[in-house]
Each structure stands twice: as C-alpha cells, then as structure tokens.
Image (cartoon, rainbow, N blue to C red; front, side):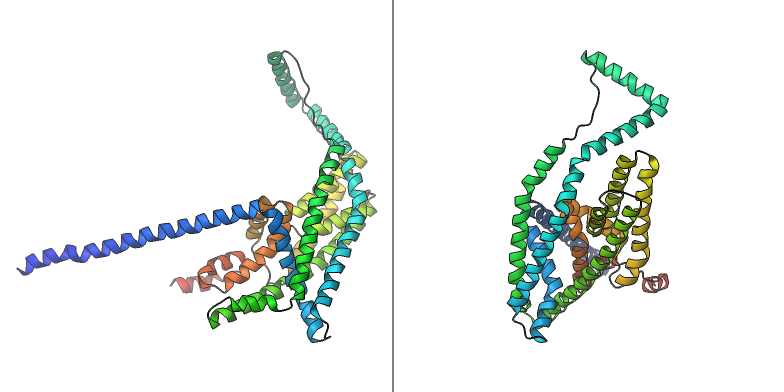
Length: 386
C-alpha cells in the first residue's frame, strides 16, 4: 500500500510545479507585450504630435536650466520671480532675433549658391569617371542599352532649383516662429511660478518616500542638465570661434557663418561634426576647384573637433556626466528619426534625464548601467558571479 500510495502521490506533487512554471512563463509574455505596445504607441504619438510636443520639451529644458537663476534672484536678491522670468525670456528672445538677423543674409547666399556647388561636384565626379576608363565604358554601354529600349537617349542630370529651396524655407518660417513664441510663453509661466512645479509634483504622489524620491530626482536632473548644457555651450562657443578663425585664415568665404554653424552643429554628437565637415568641404571645392581646397578646410575642422571631443570636453564635463558612446549615437539616430534635426539636438539632454531617473529605480538599473560610461572592474564582476 505504501508503494501504491507513493506512486499516486508523485504526479500530484509534480503537476502543481509544472503548472506554476507554465503560469509564470505565460504571464511574463503578456507583460512584455503590453510594455512593447505602450512604447510603440508612445513613440508614434510623439512623432505625430511633434509640432506641439517639441516647443513643450524645449520650454521644460530651458526651465531646468534657468530655474536656479530665478531662485537665486528670489532668495538672495529678493526679486519677484515673474520679473526675473520676464527678463530671462526677453533676453532669450533678443538672442534668437540677433542670431536670425546675423544668419539670414549669409544663409540665403549659401542656399542660392547650392546649384553652383552641385555643378562643381558633378564636374569633379565626371573627371573621376573619365579617369576610370572601364567604369566610363560600362556607363556608356548601359546608357546606349537604355536608349535603344526607349527609342531615345536621355542624359541623366541632377537639378536643384535654388529659388524653390528658398521658397520652401520661407513657407516654414511662420510655423517655426509660432513654435518659438509658444515655447517662450510657456517658459515664462514655468519660470514665473517659482517652485510651484515641484510642489505640484510632490502633491501628486501618495507616499512620503515617493515624494522625497521625486524631489531628489527633479533636483538632480535640474543640476546635472544645467551644468551639462552650460559647459557644452561654452565649449561649443569656443569651438565655433576657433573654426571660424581657421576658415578665415585659409580664405574660405563666410567664415563667421561657418563658426556659428559649428557652434550649433556640435550640440549633435558625431553627426554634427560630420555635417560641418561635409559643408566646408563642399564650399572649399566650389571656391578653389581642386582637391587641396576641399581637403584643407575638412582637415582643419576635423582637427578642431577632435581636440574638443577627445581632450577638452572630457576634462570639463567630467566622468559623472560621461555616457556610453554607442548609446549616444543610437539616441541621436533614434530621436533624429522621430523629430528630425531638432530631435538630434534634444537627444543628449533626454538621455541625461533618462539615465538619472533610471539610476534611482531598481528595475531600471540595467538601463542606467548601459547609458553610463563608467566601467565596472572585471574583478568585481567575477566576485559578483561567484
């Protein structure tokens, strides 16, 4: 009887265990599926509502940077926060108007010269093709075959109409102006409210521990983003001055414009420097009509950005704000895909905020570790594994 009872009890012990494993396995699947569906819907909504979301994001970003100035004026100088907010917003507006006035004329000339630049590039490409006889012969044979099939032989050409490009840009000016005005007005209300934003954030959370954690995260994001953006702005301003002077020394036209563009493009890691080098190389080729005229500005631009990226920025920014280079590149590419060029400018500040938030949440520690550039020693990893 004991053997019989033992045989009958064994399935009863194994069956609940199998059911528990299956239940846990099938519960994990829907949970990840729900998270995936949520992320897809979130990023789709951000893409579709970019005209509204982008001004809000910019206003929140500038609020984090300028809020310490407002608090300093209120606590130390006893200035009413709306007055400080109005002065900061008006100063930002004047800065934008000055930059627009300075760049409008040179950028219009640059856009008007695009057909000439493209023509010079096409001439250089034709020269290279002529030197490569085999490639040129294959091209002629392919052209003759296409002409025989169609009955006519049509040459291939690249046409860029400068006036149409300027007209397209002119049509975007009202929309850009409206977005800037909305962002500045929203920024004024955020700054003039003082610490009301943080008070409402704390009041919306139920537990005291959550309130303390949210306040700590908000203050750290504000501190780190302010420090990062201020440091990067100073570095980029110095880089723009250096590149502008270098372009002026080698005789490249519109050297100050290239300095300002270098300042703006360097906010986009990696891709901004590549775009700047392509631009100065194109203008240098069009102006000097030889390889030396195209390569010299590119090499100078590359040398300046290399010194800035490999030596100056790591020293001034420090290890605390250093981030994974691969993660930065993916973030720039992703937010550029979602929001275009503006998303590339916002990629790193968003990444800094996400890394800070993930560092305080246990379930997001792997994400914080992936975004951080700090490396854990191999000995510590082996100790944890053993």
